[in-house]
Length: 325
Image (cartoon, rainbow, N blue to C red; front, side):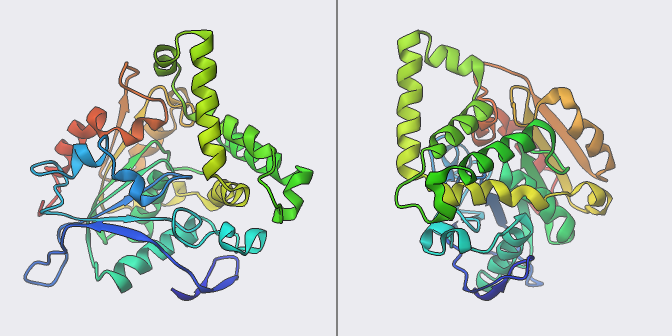
């Protein structure tokens, strides 16, 4: 995308948006696309992260809910993630300070100008992608039939969720090794920032079973942190978490025309059920429904969003109500 203008006024001469598609685009007699599905990833993820046995293997195969032989599935990498343009490409801390508004605008431009999509059957998103799904429903109310936000809430990020993001960002920015973003090796503060993310997004029940002894727990987390340190860039990481600062869909919930199915899990520390936020706000969505998945041996805390085996029966019911599906 040439001369992409961000909401803060910055302009990037060439913004690269990487994407993966499955299936073929199909239009009805009026030229309206009827089978397109946009799936949006979480904060540190990317579109190809959905191409796993536990996600694609549950949804995209023959006869499954989003069978790629009948649906056109679009998996973009958001700005700042995956193979899309990001700080670590070279600009480092001089990269434009993008927000979710910029990310959604780039997604819309990708669909309409590059892929020829003029209507979506479904927008489905996990975590950050869930939040951006709420934004899609408000900003382009007639563009989609259904919206399924997972592991999210339709209001600005505050409380412990905001504090987590603040701690992640400030732990890196205040580290002398960060050097204003011009480090030559990943600053050690990235280690602690990743630890904070892990503790907020993991599940006590699952981890107790996966690591039932002192030594197995040590080995489990040591392996996880080593792997993430090898693949995570500090500038990319803080940009990804700071991007949520402009998120605030609550004032426009009544504007949503599409059917909405919001799904959270009861063991999600990022969106804890005791706050009752989604239960309260879903009442303002004209055609909205909220499902809170109970804690079980199958749930994975915040990560339950990427395990459709747990929630796809609700998705099946929802898809059956969408016109033209």
